[in-house]
Amino acid sequence: MRIVGLTGGIASGKSTVSNLFKTHGIPVVDADLVARDVLKKGTGGWKKIVSAFGEDILQPDGEVDRPKLGQIVFSNPEKRQLLNRLLAPYISSGIFWEMLKLWMKGFKVIVLDVPLLFEAKMDKWTKPIIVIWVDPETQLQRLVLRDGTSADVAQNRINAQMSLDLKRTRADIVIDNTGSLEDLKEQFQNVLFEVTKPLTWTEFGLSKQGAASVLISIIVGVLIFRKVYNTESL
Image (cartoon, rainbow, N blue to C red):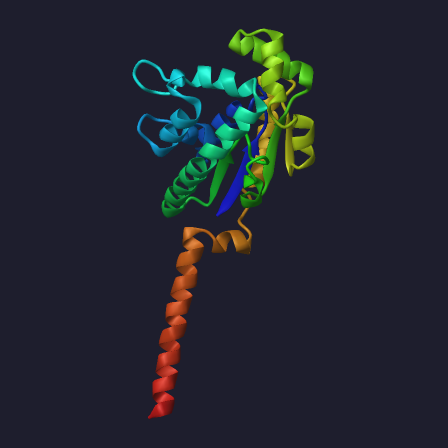
């Protein structure tokens, strides 16, 4: 199975590319959606966060107030690191199970959409790695427009993440999203061609079909061995 890593920065357009993959029939494991699940009321992740940050971060219904928690961690690097450290095991486990379900369904190519792909060291699971890049000015303008926040608040959120310039140096494929949506879609077609190429032998071996082929080969080999062994022993 080919596991494609997809990452970028806030307001870079990563979600748009993720949706383009989905519309072309390629399943996406979204780390943000997994993170929402592990923060649901009563889960292990929820209990860890409430214990660390207090009940002030909860809504009246007991669910985590995500915007409020975001304000806390984006303005405090130590608390942001604490949050990541507490949730990392739950998110990694959730991602693994989502990938396993897709593997069981026989998908040969999946996209792993993780904002903190490099920071969480999940890049070692993926090949190729796609980084959605925009210049700093465009990123700031889009974030301010999208969230309706001040430039200072938006810049703090951008600064809380690894820079896109650094991420692009570690990418196999870079999509420049400073242009229009049509420009993005044109670049995406080239990327789609790359990621849907025939699997390498290693990737095929990791697919459900490859595992089945290996199992069948082993069974056939064992049967032949037993037949030869029995003949020789007569």
